Image 1 (spheres, one colour):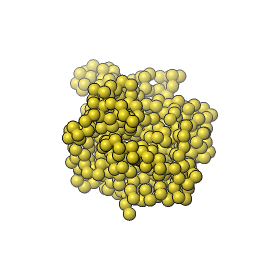
Image 2: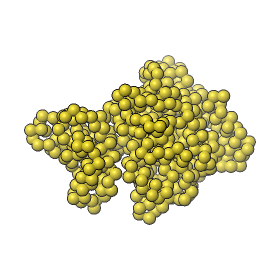
Image 3: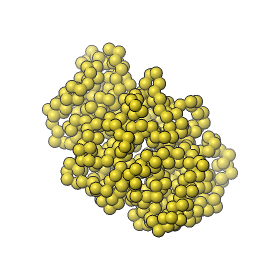
Image 4: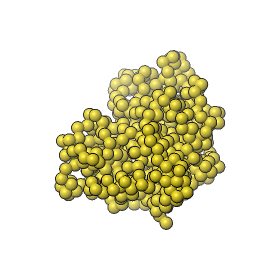
Amino acid sequence: MSALENFWLTLAKHAENRQDQVALAGDQDQCTYGQLPAAINARSRALEASGCRRVALSMANGSDWLLWDLALLRSNLVCIPVPPFFSAEQVCHLLDSATVDAVIGELPGDVNITPRGFSRTSLGWQRLMPEKQEAAAVALPENTCKITFTSGTTGQPKGVCLAAEALMTVASSLQTACSEVRPERHLVLLPLGVLLDNIGVYAALLAGACIHLPEHTGVSNNMLDIQLLMQALHQARPHTLILVPQLLQGLLQAADAGLLAPDSLRFIAVGGGRVAPALLERAAQLQWPVYEGYGLSECASVVCLNRPTRHRAGTVGQALPHVQISIAEDGEILVHGNCPLGYLGSAIRAPGPWPTGDIGHMDEGYLTILGRKKNQFITAFGRNVNPEWVEAELTAEPAIAQAFVHGEALPCNLALIVPRHEQVTSVQIAEAVALANAGLPGYARVHHWLVIAQPFTSTDGLLTSNGRLRRAAIFQHYRQALQGLLPQELAHAFF
């Protein structure tokens, strides 16, 4: 039986055996497992009547988002989630590049959709003249069911084409990995317009859990409202959560301020970027069940994950059962199995294992991430340095919230440093840099730095949606400031 067939069969069994149990709990509504099939089928009929083929979902988190997503899956139509943090230009690129013919929900106010041939219908927004639209549609790889747009680091976001079987294979693998904690309540904190918690909710449905889908969780465009976040946590009292590193950091800061998370938590998966060891150590001190993982959109999200009975600190865990990991000669991590169908606009699929662009090493099946292959710089002394490694050491110090390290072709490494709060002094920053340097070899140490008051955010284009640094954008934005850190003769030679 395929993973997709198993998903629908499992939901049918839940509808019979858990008829009155709540499956989806939104702010104003809820849907039981007994009601779930009818709710999905009603939306499937509406989709069939509309004649649409490629549908963008542009809605806030809630039961309705997930029901439309499941209806698109059931109807074998293509779902294109719209990330809520996309700019108007990026949303327009998504609509045009995917040849979207229907939009369910409301696009950001600064997106003018009518010049693109859309008009209001009972479904939402639809393009006129579907025959012309179909003829002009960009070809998709066979079996594409979802196009997830990655934020990327340069240029317009890329659309990754994924098959339903790939999505459900990961969900099944994730559900099996978490089965030992017996999750009964899952809280969605990340926007459903991003792939990571799509997989989380599919896994929760397979487990027969109640999925809490509040619209307002205090998490918005990499900004964090601790009070709202804690309110969402204590109202849902979840057993499972999926976090990005910045969210974990926010929860730990709240705990340090006396705002503790509920004691119901059994499994907190954190991924989407490298997690500073100090955050994981602090979570362990609080006895929080935090487990670091690793994945990428091209492989339908989760690839590796620590779990209660298979946990090794400092790693992202072992590969889940549906994939295998190998390391290339140059250190690049290769994923075997569950690769994408292709990128939107280019259906050419990479042969063999998927090259992740990350470098790392394996020890007894546990994967350690060392950094991004393309971010590796070579110093003037010919030493290779992964900036994420140095940045993680810097941000592990309590005085430093964010750091950006640059050293390409330079005889010394430079850094931009964002203090943890306004009360942090220059002396404390200097001490923090010294402590971080003490644990690094000479070629990786930071020699000159600039303290900046404004943090890197996604709204200013300096962070991706999951909190990764947009290195090219940061370098261009602060190029002159970085140049000013060097003696004049070096600045002219290397910039």
